[in-house]
Image (cartoon, rainbow over all chains, first blue to last red; front, side, top):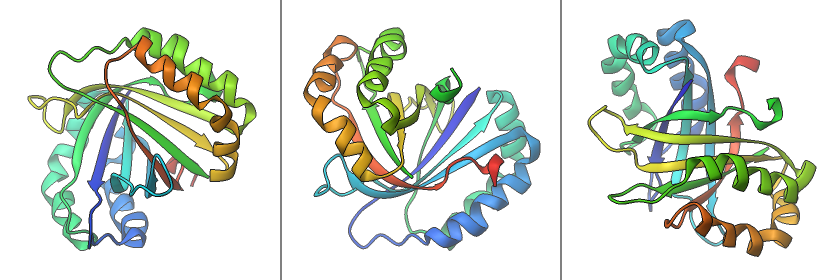
Length: 109
Length: 109
């Protein structure tokens, strides 16, 4: 299984509509990717490693797919539409990373 | 619920022992934090957003806890030991972020 992490850098004056992200953007991704998107997670940045430090990312999502192939086949045809929707909730450009899922959920080990 | 994301920056010549991380370091965290650590996930960085770009992070884990209080109460007393163990698998210093879990698993919505 692979995980696509989409991470929006935090910073002074950042615009990020967490409600739109949760209620509109992420469900849109799910509708477009269909069953190839096994599930996703959504995070709202609170702080850095200490309560005084700012969070590195204001918001993040992680998309879980069976393989790189299923991700590209399901996301690729909708990439333009989904990327264009980013401007509806933030002025930031995300950092994207693809990872191999080593442990999906330790509670299931 | 909150998520503690621990992200190890990638880079040329990075040292990161993914086996030690999965088999030794993460189980040690679980033993020390006990039930306060609901579960964790582990990722191994493959690429950036395109297959040509390097991953931003060589490895990541995410620790899921009920609250900031339960995280600090369970991790804090063992922070020194757990931080010292980092040198056993990598030469990198992690970026840590604490997030509010907005969507834990969309498959459960």
